[in-house]
Amino acid sequence: MGDFADLPQQKREALLLKPIKPKDDSCKLLDKPFIMSFDDYALNGKSKEMAEKMKSDTYILKELAIAGQMTVFYAAPNTGKTLIILKMLIDSIRRGDVKAEYVYFINADDNGKGMITKLKIAEEHGFKMLSPNFEGFSVAVFEGVINHLVGADDCAGKVVILDTVKKFTDIMNKQASTMFGTMMRSFSSKGGSVIMLAHTNKNRDGEGKRVFAGTSDLLEDCDCSYIMDVASTDTPTGTEKLVTFENNKQRGDVAQKLNVYYRSVQGMDYRGLMATVEIRDESEAKKLMQSADVEQSRKDNIEIITAIIETIEEGTTLKTEIINSVAHSIAVSRPKVKKVLEKHIGGDYMAGYRWEHAQRNAGDPAAAKRLKLIPPAS
Image (cartoon, rainbow, N blue to C red; front, side, top):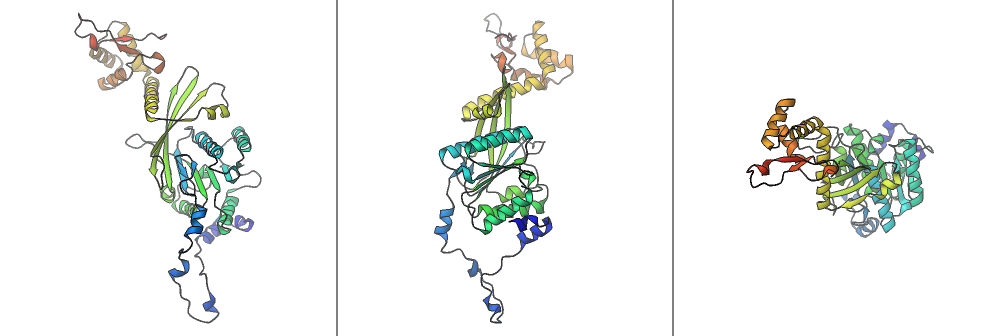
């Protein structure tokens, strides 16, 4: 292990790419021409042995990551990916799906305070935490340990979590990503489990969805992959967040979509935050997403909302008249004003709504198209 770790990067890569030697080179002793055959490498007869090393459909992270696979989670900063992954890992340890002493959480993307907090959590639940530049651990040592475990056939049951993967390979470089994927595949093919946390691009795609950062090599090499996105809503005491996991590659019975909720309150510590993490069903998720959408609109459209409120206060209550008046007064397009106006029709001021439909009046044919403001105290 130590010898490999001490080698320069170029030589380590050369060793990883070096062809496997034939099992039997006795022909050289007999001075005969060398003959290679696929038969020398056939796995036939070892299915039982290999099956015992691979626990089929045992989840490292329930519904998301299967034992013996390489799984990557892509998310933007501050999504809560580490928080959720650690909570789900602890749940798996408690259920007995994972042996804590075989879990290695490599924290390479944290500050000092955060690292100590997570180390205490690791100590409490029995899994191991490592971090570059501490106790002599480094990327070179990591590569050396992985290759040693593969060579010693000692991968089964072990779980490696990389937070984040960009600290272990250049995800923007195809050759580096391919080399890294090859090394980690050798580990998972012998029963090890790999969970990698990675980032998404800053910009979304044409449909408004998150896109993984880097080349496609990491995605191509893994068994399973998820894109994570988050919707947040401010509350009087803090923030509610709904994180949606959407699968974009799978091998095995994993969830196509999973909604995970957590909330923060001012003064809450990391353990308290972790205690709020829970899976939500689709109907609950839709309500939270809708609230988050309204809240985001409230933040993004303060000028339009203020102008609509002032217009209604001045006595203009018919929708079309409000839209025309506001569009003219603040030089914003009518479709934009209409979109904001429609989004904030509702009965709950604290949820971001600011006006609601007026009561029907038999003497006013246009009553259904009139709006009234919601008092802040409601």
